[in-house]
Image (cartoon, rainbow, N blue to C red):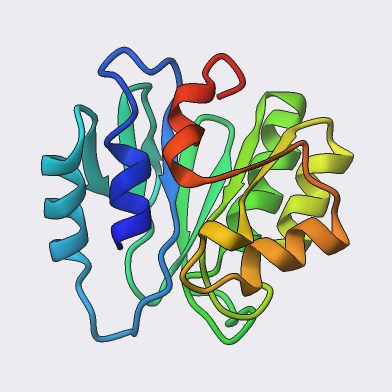
Length: 171
């Protein structure tokens, strides 16, 4: 949560895109605490994603617990779907759906975490011409996920979190 909080704090109110966040959490967690933390950490508004919700710039959409979040034609789809990488929500379904829907306009960021969730989704983003950013594993409390993306995808940028939000216009 600290890593995500540090990233969100860097975005200005006029950030020109929606931000979609998948955080691994147990099925019995509501995620309300994370929404509150992100709302006070930066100037963007964080909300739980809802099925068939249209998304807007300047908002952070958090995948609800025990559901995947997909992006299709200007809407968020919240689905139960099978677990991926032992997780629901998982990052790969979000990244894959965003890559298919928005191609080279997608920027995928992978932060600290265990195992390799995000790797297959980043491959899709890269194949569709999007930008792949990984947290520098030396900066990550759990370097597995960014390290997997770096080794298996080849990222466009490998940065400590403190530099990611200041890398606009990359972002």
